[in-house]
Length: 116
Image: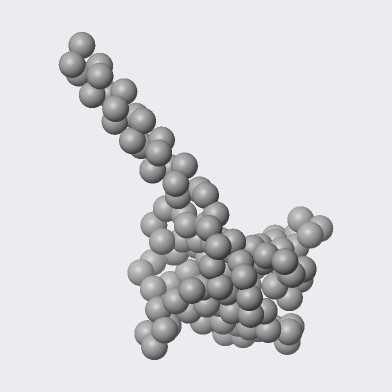
């Protein structure tokens, strides 16, 4: 019985951790790149496993056409970045490296994403 109670408690804690990671929270984003106007403003930040995250603008249309951006860690300090448009097109922005000068920023060949 004691083991059963421990398993239930462990399952409840894991569920709480997984749900907490999936909840978006407000942040300040700066998205610059690809000739689009810079986005500087409020965004929803959703943390994912392993340091990956996604962002979505709050109160403004999009990040240069993308309604959400995902930054997926592929190795320490390196991420694959994609943008999702209103039409459901998932476009590859490319590889980005974490900035050493400002660790809140990820820099690609023609874009920069910062989340504070």
